Length: 342
Image 1 (cartoon, rainbow, N blue to C red):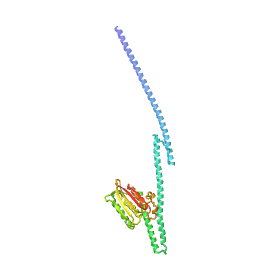
Image 2 (image 1 turned 90 degrees about the vertical axis):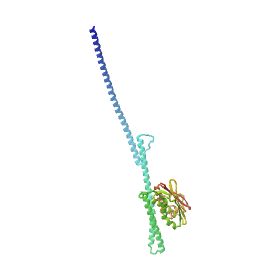
Image 3 (image 1 turned 180 degrees about the vertical axis):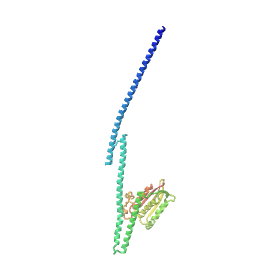
Image 4 (image 1 turned 180 degrees about the horizontal axis):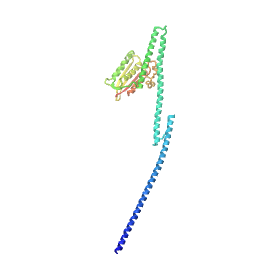
């Protein structure tokens, strides 16, 4: 009986061992199968990535080709016609952004070309104006020099011709001096150095320069300016501004006339008003009087070259100031010079 039980027990142990072996083998098989599936999935994933990458690369290359072709077409159009193809402002693509930048570049080039043409026209006009301004006094001087060479010329005529010749040379010298000032200002050789300074001192120096001319025509000049008033200005060049405006006031005011100067101050500017009882300026000419070499119809018989007020405007502009004019024909003019307070 014991032997029988022992045999059954041994049989049960062996059977259990066999089962364990079988289950172990099955487990190993399952692991191997899972591993193979994982490897297969990885291979498939790699292939999918390679295919997707290839498709994306082709798409990008195609977009780059379209982008390059569009840029080339736009650049050629800009070079040939100075304009570019119409672009969509609603797209957010790289091509659209690049075209926008090209459009800005095209506009910038267009403005530069336009400004260059304008500068060329201004230069041609300037050369023409200078030639005309210089030609007249030189031609007159030659004419009177020729007349002075006549042996039978009376003393009276000789003195008269010499006086006219002196006037023409003075006019030419005045023109050259103003042209030199104008060119130096425009090219920046003379740099203004505005400082907060008393207005009274600058105004007094300008009045000293034109006092003799006023006395010769018996023109009275009145001044109202508080001593403590200051403004931002370059003393030398702002003195030139005052002198030019005062010189014009004397030139176009008849004998025994009046010139009044008043200085006042507001929040932003110190205003120097120079009013005269002269011939006045027609309303249609007021916008033109600050142009280079412009001279009104009613003043062409007066000595001058038409640069003074142009210089006035340029100097004031460099000092962050400006000038305005109020005038009526036959009643006089008032020039208001605005100088920045600080």
